[in-house]
Image (cartoon, rainbow, N blue to C red):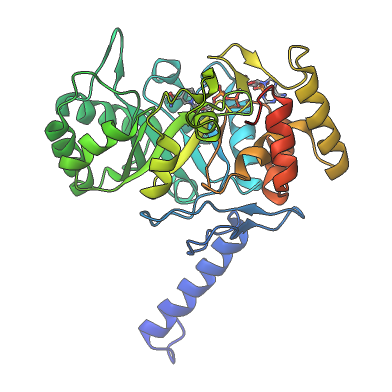
Length: 352
Ligand SMILES: NC(=O)c1ccc[n+]([C@@H]2O[C@H](COP(=O)([O-])OP(=O)(O)OC[C@H]3O[C@@H](n4cnc5c(N)ncnc54)[C@H](OP(=O)(O)O)[C@@H]3O)[C@@H](O)[C@H]2O)c1
């Protein structure tokens, strides 16, 4: 240390130098703001926006990468995929204790060589509550499951924990106890659910003191149950059947962010609707819009979800870095109302 410089000042200079270096090396930093359409990444000539989150102090990309399908991948390929995501501004990664029997979480951390600096740049979400042959929201299982996920992900905390699928035997008092223990110990920062209807969430909320921030639900252009019933209220047709208790309106009313899972699949994992001869009219419309906007069909499929004013955060499950880059362009385009409805109708839906 130069002897004319007081110790505190010298420390400050060194700290500033280290921070400047760190900022230059790291991915685009997250910014603290809760408005939608905040830009996370301007580097590549397009903008990855953050999702509007009301009850939660996270600056999360509006597109999230799901890690359900990575367990069979080579470590180098996983690393390339995750670094591509970060380069594109995708900072939110969705896991579950059961994906690949735990291997998705384990290989994610192993492939990246998880370390403190990388961990800081990511928002990690995991889920628990599905066991072989049963669903289990008992306090004991939730606590045990989180410890397992933390170990596999090589981290001290997850940003978000979701209850994966409703447990018919749920005792919400136990969930509440588990959430409080996890929050107080710093192991989980925020909580949510998956595949739950409004009354199930209300039941939890009677006991759980933390806000329910997310509800992960199946939703894609070819899986629109959440909006069909609302368009066809009181009609004597199948589309009028309300199968989910108006979950989308409930989530909007309660500031719960919907995370659409499987945004490219039709049915229950029956396949991808894009470039699929079973959906000629839909693909013709999507391809026409993709050509007009200079993006791929994957970007249009995600842009269709992002156009909904509920500010949903789709969870994409691609394992292909180029596909991921292509679909991230969705964050940079906004479909018109007319285009949104054209796609809805091309998928075989009708309007009253
Ligand atoms: N909460 C729940 O109950 C629940 C249930 C299921 C999933 N999830 C979450 O949602 C995430 C996404 O699910 P998902 O993987 O089923 O979603 P997805 O993004 O709809 O499907 C991705 C799969 O489709 C393939 N694919 C083939 N052609 C494609 C194309 N043109 N465009 C896009 N994908 C194409 C991908 O192959 P490539 O890898 O070759 O691109 C990949 O295998 C999961 O990772 C998980 O995190 C949650």
